Image (cartoon, rainbow, N blue to C red; front, side, top):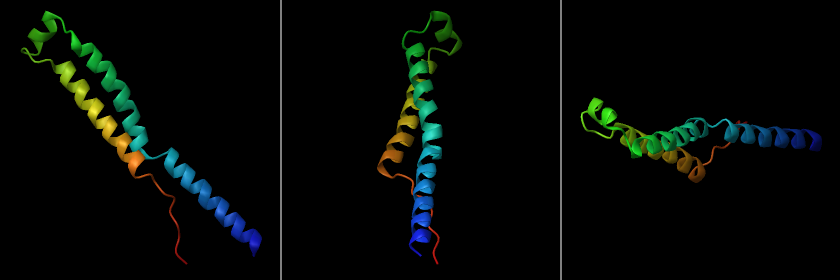
Length: 90
């Protein structure tokens, strides 16, 4: 009986690890932060032609900042409320 309990505990631990690793918040949040930084940097000093196309709006800057905020939201939420492996009820 002890071996079975150890095996079940090990499977539960692996399940929790996989749940944290493949959490959708990490998969979505990470790239949003990276791309948000890139687009924000690109939007800090736009050319006159880019501003004219966007009718005077710093669209890259605002889009980059929005992506950065969204990505950070996902990652902070992941940190504050980590995923747990599912437990079956007997």
